[in-house]
Amino acid sequence: MTNSELRPGLRLVEVYTMQRMLKLLWFGDPAASEVVVMMAGAMGGFSGPARAMYLELADRQVVRDRGAIIVDYRKPGDLDRSLLDVAATVDWSMREGGRRFAMVGHSFGGAVAIQAGAMVSNHCAAVVTLSTQSAGCQIANQLGDIPLLLLHGDRDEVLTPDNSAMVRMMAGYGDFRIIEGAGHGLESARDELIALLDEWIDDRFAGRADAGA
Image (cartoon, rainbow, N blue to C red; front, top):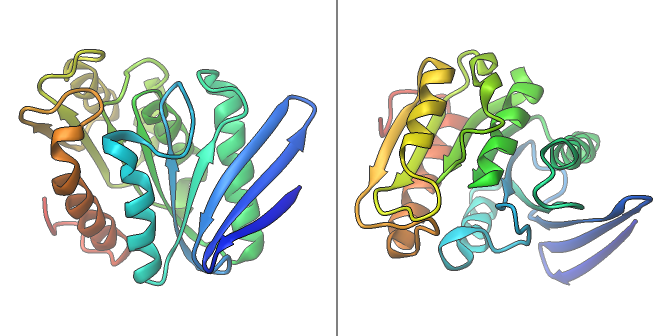
């Protein structure tokens, strides 16, 4: 494992395994008790949807004295292996001081976020899916009462909003919102989404379950 400081408060962690390299962008104090974990789609990478939205959202968490980690999977598109990558990330964070986590995933990453939320269970403060696929989300009913936000553009050219509706049905609950005029990458709603997620995630960590609903 290598740990390189890119700038104050931002580290690139590279973990060498027998099955490719896992990379993490780790924002903020590693000992932060509240951590937002962000997952990309089937292409992997750090930027996420909406023109590198994850990077700005991560910086906003640091301002709130939280940590944020963006996971670049070892094998993007492989759900089982990607979930293991997130499980390892949560374990490393907990060893540093992480205690509560919010899972955010785009497209394929939505399924990873759903499964990771169920896996983390009592340590999960919230799960957010962005333009999610429904495949791999069958265990959404195992989230229990973890707050769930599903956002989907009405002009998604890759996965229709029906996918998010299906995930909500499988979970049996959830705050499902259609983003008008937005495609799969949600580019047209970038600023709106960053502000929404920053506030919504903050409310869930604070335990304000009805705020912004």
